[in-house]
Image (cartoon, rainbow, N blue to C red; front, side):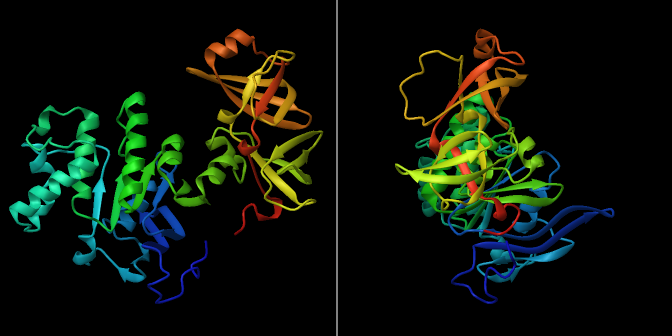
Length: 379
């Protein structure tokens, strides 16, 4: 993304938050090096990456919590900094741990309003509305010390939303939750953020969480943003081998659009044909990505279930990698490598080993494509 995307001095077309030339150096070591990042107004931008990738540092810089070694932050098209108290008061945050105060839920949610001198009657009304937004209506008088982890984090979100922020920062807000609660709260947080139309920066190391909450995803590595854009394409079509490995996918396949028939594109990849939604003209060279979670795996010759899936591919197992409750299976079909994610029980039942013949089944909508000459460049 170019720093020239937004015209200088243009407020009407400016993103809600923009960072330009951001660098952070600690003891001679550069931990953040981002040429440009823009947070679209009213949308959720998820920063995804492994621990130490620079996600939280970038969040602190864009949230005016930390001064960068170099670069600048703009809000509404205007330069700002940590010294800009008025702008900082338009930003709220939710962190990994809720850090609730002793007292009632209402005391915690209304704390920031009390510091800002909001009258008691208005404070009570705004606290009640914020609690209702996060599914905790009428919880004002409960002790904050009796809440479960999920309840406490929803109170923390209400404490941020009650301030009516222009920008909301969320730094790994669900990382300490057990898997079942995390899935539930991820959906709740996504609904709340969408309905509030708040500009949000959401930091996580969990790609499933990012896929649910985000309108835009940026993937970070070693302090840099190495991929950015629509979640379906960022997570479904990695731009290089490192991204493919990070996302648990195989590197993208190379193919050519041979025809568009019955509303679908037929793409020739080596010796196999794949069907996808048409995005390019016939004859266009494309890269193809398929997420393992979208691929069903069967023994050859079995009666396949009735389905709208247009892609049925025969191949042989090249790798089986146990991953706890699941297994990652890499299948060779022609010259193509396609990964599938199956339950550990299914892998055992199918007796999957090197060389086992299998049938892959997946929908055309699961096949992501992009012009081959745009990978690594600007679309």
